[in-house]
Image (tube, rainbow, N blue to C red):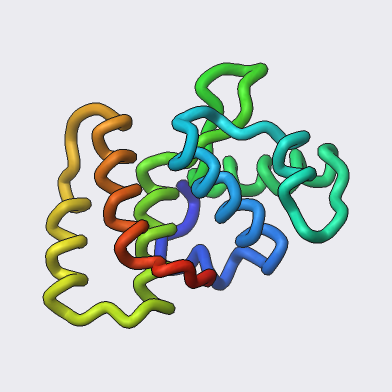
Length: 133
C-alpha cells in the first residue's frame, strides 16, 4: 500500500470512491469478488467495463482491493475494509465509545478473512443506517 489509510479520501475522486463502495457492498453481500462488467451495470453514471477496470487498477495499486486470481473480479483487502469503516465513521454519528469498540475489533486482527468480513458486515450494517458517504 503506497498511502496511509487516512490519505485515501484525498487521493480518491468521487468516481473511485463510488466504485470502491460498490465493490465493498457487493462483496459483503455475496462474499464473491466483483467484476468490472457487474460494476459498470451497478453504477448510476454510464461507465464502460474498461473504464471501471482502470479505476479498479488504481484501487488495487493503493492496496484497497485485490484479485484472488488473475481472471477473477476484485475484493476488498483488510486495509480496504478498514478504510471503508473509517470513512463511514467520519460521516456517521458514532460516539467515542463506539469508535473505540470498533477500533479494538479491527486492530491486530488475525485469522480468516471471511471471519473479519462477517464482523465488518455486522458493524457496517449497524453504522450505515442506509446513509452513503
